[in-house]
Length: 116
Image 1 (cartoon, one colour):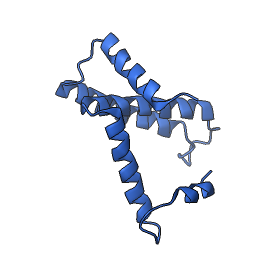
Image 2 (image 1 turned 90 degrees about the horizontal axis):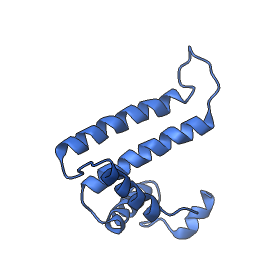
Image 3 (image 1 turned 30 degrees about the horizontal axis):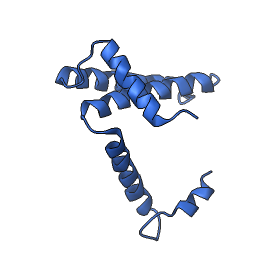
Image 4 (image 1 turned 180 degrees about the horizontal axis):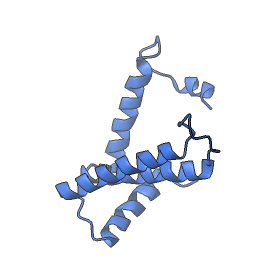
């Protein structure tokens, strides 16, 4: 299995190869615009239009979601936060969201079995 760490650092190197400076507002703005565009492409790969009946292409859908993920990684890198610190923030946010929908204060690891 590919790790998030490998993907994160490979994306960081790719941005350097493109000579992109993640510390500029222009970089953030371009990535936000690109992410917005990619989200539209994800929507285009779904059958959400009642007047347009076409088969969903799951491979194309996953590819567009992957593009979104890469632009999100670019934005994370623009915050100049360590990957592990960011993953802790994501974990805490996810726990907060889960806690809103559970009776317990903490969503337990054993509860994940119902999602797998």
